[in-house]
Image (cartoon, rainbow, N blue to C red):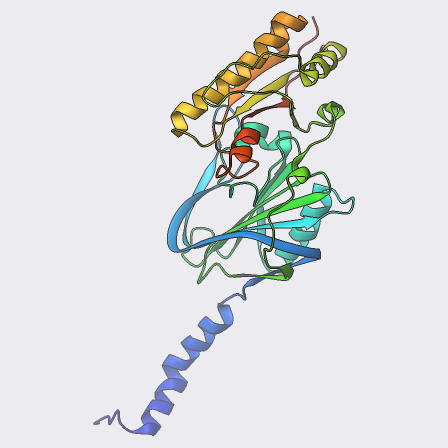
Length: 331
């Protein structure tokens, strides 16, 4: 039998028995793009995408000097959002977004909160868009990983969701990768019009340490390129020393930060030296027990303002104090 493939009736019959059913199955199986509904007007502060790449998403908490991850590849989209909380907590934010993610057919693979995630080590093991577009409070953040589709399949879609806050301002970063595309429709989102107010990042008084949140020691002054505090009396160190003496069973990290002048390696070393110089002042001038204070540094990886201005660089040269997850054992 000779088949005339120019015959329209042949194409109709062939579609009915072979090609079209497969196309219909594919179309039916293709999941719709994720839609997120924020409860309040939300500003999209940053967005980055790649057509095809691979990243490592956390799959468990940081433990034993290791952050477990899974390698996923596909179309990537990372978005950051800023919203006014009006008293809502990071848990309330996460619960609202988690419910929508699950309703869209995603299975939650891993979820954690601040210290249970691994605190400082977990946060700096996750790819986060830079400040001021995305802010992560080292003492108050939540993370969620979810998958839609068969794990390991090329069509599987993966989500990494980070939620944090600064005062009454909420910050959300959504990372999506895999599947046919990484599109996410965000409802009730406003275009970026102004940079976040720097005051939003002021974490409040030292009493926040008791809640596990970080505190910038705002009055410390470092010259550019120097690890030594300029001479003077610093009220923030007096307050921190008073808090440590009142809580002898607690330990704090001093986390140093620099501006973006120079290499990452050099700035990471410098930031730790700055934190260590503050630690030595607490030990030598305020008689704080050495085991109560530990110094770390992250260089210029977590700016709170633009490094393009002199004022921004000055504010980025700072030291933060935050409670460690491990208390000092009683004698």
